[in-house]
Image 1 (cartoon, rainbow, N blue to C red):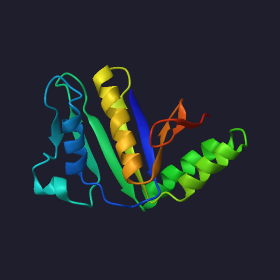
Image 2: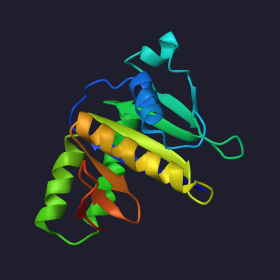
Image 3: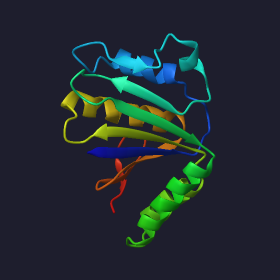
Image 4: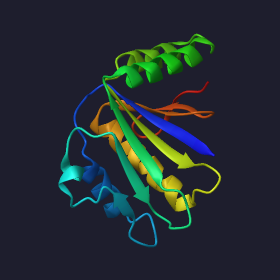
Amino acid sequence: MSYFLRVFCRSAQPVTRREIAEFITAGSFFGCEPRFDPPPDSAEAADENWAALAVHYDSQKRPVRIERNLNNALLQEEVQEILFVLAKSKETQARQDVERVIRTAAQVFSLEVNRETASEDCWEMLDSVQSFLAEKCDGIVYAPDDGFFDRKLRPLYKL
């Protein structure tokens, strides 16, 4: 079953697929070298305008998919969906702070993983990538059922 983690970023600063792949490779999260689609050494991976990156970390498991939405209708749809969910939760200063970041998001990274089959190494990689993206692009992390987290993955607000 797909599980979607999101990083809502206030900065539209480009992060290439090559940067993400190099970050993952440097982290040595897996017992083997992960494979990326597109490959990090391709011209496509260096493109600043991209939509998706696949991280193949185990040939027996579905790859992690990282998508980037930048100031488009899909980004606005994701923002409205999260604001709708937040509106049903308790009104607090923390919720207002989270809403402010969500409303001003210039881009959203979505990390899709199979929740049931992902390895511990995969979850560690996902945490690191979320933190990397949130740090680089001034963002916060949203994990359904767990809430919102800052760039160091410290809790900001629980739904």
